Image 1 (tube, rainbow, N blue to C red):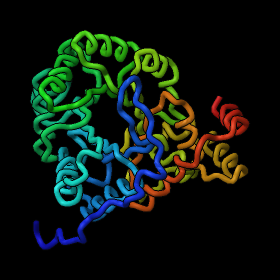
Image 2 (image 1 turned 90 degrees about the horizontal axis):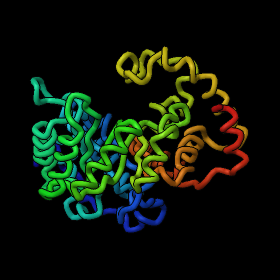
Image 3 (image 1 turned 120 degrees about the horizontal axis):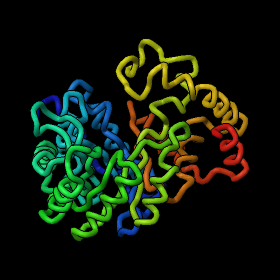
Image 4 (image 1 turned 180 degrees about the vertical axis):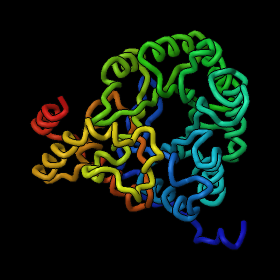
Length: 335
């Protein structure tokens, strides 16, 4: 530890479990916090370490137990896991068994033929590297981050099953799979004696594709669902109603937040904002409570720039179910 790591000893809030909802993940014994912390942004090697550390501390104090990482989160690739490993060593070793730590592999991590995809070589080597970066013996959850059409699904699922059988992952999941791919993958894993715990995909008011096939497949097979980008990368906060500011950290950098993709949804976002104001609810809260309305949704993965922003999101999601009449008005806007 260097002199720059000096900080008061962390002691978790004794009331950390009082305000969070914990949802059962499909047909399993796992309960996940309704809000999870995603370490996709603000935890890389170019970000301020103390801020990242403060966010994770605040998350746990608020009852957030599920922390979502991937091998290529940063930038640079791998640095989010390194940052989290450092935070874990400094603050969370006494609480390891209270955390549900997930990582993923699938997208490009390194150059060459073994740096992406779904081969057994890539997935298992990546898991080993992730464990080393975080200083862990095992992760609670290991995802295949994306379907690889050039690798037999049996090989990719065999790698996930091996991760479980070797003790390096307690559970496995899928991410960004289509309904048909997910159903087949679940069947293959079952044949190998491993249950698919969860599937993770983009889901929010303006990206409802999982409702059309994926969520029914997951319900039928007892698989949970983790929704990433429940605020549509900030669109559902209303801050892009007048376009993407030049100073935005995502300006020109996000494949999901572009002027072309913003244009078709912005009018609905404005109408949702007006409805939220009329109802006395911030648009952010409306969006998060809406995303949790379906019990098939196990957890919402939110990002945060500051501990205060994370706290706002947690408290919004904890506000409870929306009134059925309000849900009907939302449906009319989203139709």
